[in-house]
Image (cartoon, rainbow over all chains, first blue to last red):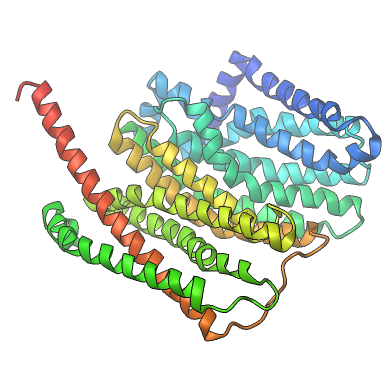
Amino acid sequence: MGKFIELVKRDLALAFRQGMDSLMVVAFFIIAVVLFPFGVGPEPSTLAKIAGGTIWVAALLSSMLSLERLFQTDHDDGSLELLALAPVPLEITVLAKVVAHWLTTGLPLIVTAPLLAVLMQLPSEGFLVLIAALLLGTPTLSLIGAVGAALILGSRRGGVLLSLLVLPLYIPILIFGVSAVDAAIFDQSVRPHLVFLAALLVGALALTPWAAAAGLRQALE
Amino acid sequence: MHRFANPTRFLKIAAAVQPWMAGLTIILFGTGLYMAFFTAPPDYQQGESIRIMYVHVPAAWMGMFCYAAMAVASAVALIWKHPLADVAAKATAPVGAAFTFLSLATGSLWGKPMWGTWWVWDARLTSMLILLFLYIGYMALQGAFDDRTRGAKASAVLALVGAVNLPIIKFSVDWWNTLHQTSSFMKQGGPSMPPEMWIPAVVMAVAFKTYYVWVLLVRIRQELTANKVRILRLKQVHGG
């Protein structure tokens, strides 16, 4: 556990020293959402209808942006090999890196989401549920993304490839995340949607570190 | 299974089986298509356009069957390092993608006269579309590395991740569909089919299966030969 926290701290320190990375993700998130009123027109009723979906899709895309670098920088400078040789199981290392990724991208997205919800005229009943759904959903995005990031290590054109691999797997989270927000707006029960999001999170937490570690081991062979 | 791990032994068997599969495929396709076009009656509601079903439904089955086959072959390749399983998984992917695309295309052609639209965000159509994306991602990952064995291993992991995810995606798309769909184009249940209709469908399904085995054998042999050629070239370059 101590080693796990050390690893998280190391990744966080690296992220803060490079500074701009998580800011850029947030900026992309905002700009992507702001494009939609230009696309569909500024009528509040139209915007309110698509607000939940837009914010979720933008969150999906922005959390994917920084995934490519999840293992890439460590792979390039060789520290990934040292991490793999360390007495800590590689699955735990993966989990630590995912936690750091979520803290530097997922969490800033969640903090920004209410602002965008205001811009998109999301009805106020949806706010809390949007935050709750993002809190349950974005860690799953980081977990699934880690598998993709591990698999593309050392490939040509990794970034585009990563989106091709990861986005289809993101669809269930998008579906339940958006339907939770919609349910809150239409005054229906929110619980089943959030429970499904939680189930996806628990399932991903149990399975994806193994798949990502398997991917890393092959990259290091 | 390990008896056939030896490529030489496999190639011998494959060479013997392949013409039989080819013949069987041609006969079955001939019979199936003849029955589908001439002996099967037109549907009392859908008329002649029901005949698309004889291609559409077997193609959709094969799209899913090929993904399952690919996942099993990938698991075998990862667990036992079976040398042919990698090749088989690689050979299956484009065939499965083609079947999935065929089922989407024929579904679209069928949808236009029946539902009045080329595309509906129906749960089944959507899941098949996502399946097609999974195939494309698999093939893209396989070709993205300079080192071919790395591409094979990475895509094998991806195939397994996709296989675990497919039921979840299928379920969530069904859920999404029941929430969003306001009018149902699909007629639930429908008339139970007379034998003149389901027999050609079964014949076509078997024809698709034998076609798959035939193409799989051709592709595996081609891949093994290509490997040999590559090794010979490398030997030449390195002054063998």
